[in-house]
Image (tube, rainbow, N blue to C red; front, top):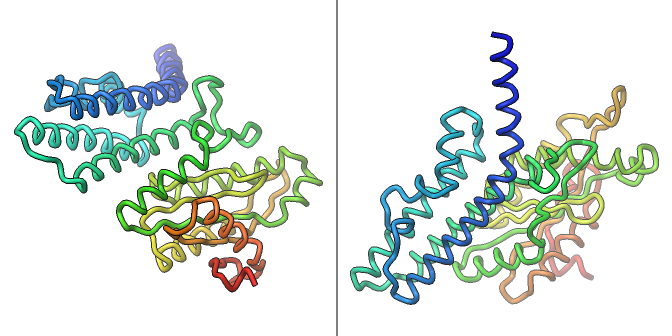
Length: 309
């Protein structure tokens, strides 16, 4: 019985180490599959079973891997549940739209946009899981001592440009939140970069656990976060920022075995403006954060033209 337990523990560890590599392959397979769908649609080619098959989301490589390890209980948690849902939904949407093309019908732009939005959500959730479990090339799990660079595979601006373009296309608003933790210079002087990384790693885990799967979180500079929150207006993003403000200060961060630090942060918020490039919207969030105060009720600031005067 003891040998069986050790063997099962080793198998679980192997699966845990396999997750980053499997997710990496899932992202590549997803992009190849989507490119193949687009080629078949544009060139009027006969689609294969990987597109129109009723169980295409289960027969692809990632689908088989996901089903097998979900059955073992190794892929538990909301992110994995959301990943499986998005994977199934994008295959269903692709099959539905292809059936329209095969019947000689035109695809409405909003239905195509909806499929592409689901495809993008799948990729974003996959990247988030990858960041939390470590990348296949280093095999490292995100820890206090070895903080993985958030969203390292995709450049921040290209991700923001994609969201900005979607907001412009759909007419929906998009918000950026700059999160600037207080006291990081003092932490760095006392505990060095390891101390800073411990604070950032702790805050990253809190942010990830309380944002939607398709919200994007980036490490911005040495000790800041930038959060992209799609489909939110001023009232909604203020609710998000207020919740995160309370979450960050709720529990202290352990800097050593016997030292804890209660952290606060300042929040700068800017709303998407279709007349302004994304870099300008980002700069506005940063400027708003610099105008925020440290006291409760002063830590969240919205950018406005008056702030520039």
